[in-house]
Length: 191
Image (cartoon, rainbow, N blue to C red; front, side, top):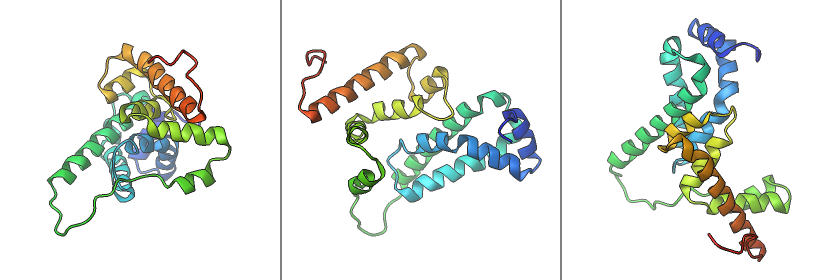
């Protein structure tokens, strides 16, 4: 099934082939999650947005004009659905008071899941990056990979700025890791 082209899978999925749907979801679910995780949602809202993206594909799978760009279509749809969910949340008025606590990763659980000090250092440094850097790094490292044109559309930047911005984000992440180790940045500390 993994050898089938995206175009073949979309045609079969539109005809109701469950195995084709499963193959599409299996191939692209990490990509969709990587986009959805870039938004400040609780787990329930993340799951709702994730499911809505697949519903949109069900509605449009027979009309996808460029099947080879399905990864970009899914990433863009995930971003649009997440923005729609954010807008909906802003319009809602809570009926009772509740504390609005940020959705944070449980550091104890992360320490159990991530073995080795260097992996934990990467995880901590990533968490300290500005949101725009975290979002860009998730997209650049998405599986399946996205082309720079799609990434540029998703982050609202020129294509030519993706590589240099990626480089600056990685440099900043290294500086954070070195600061945590108590070392001076290798480039003399200048930003």
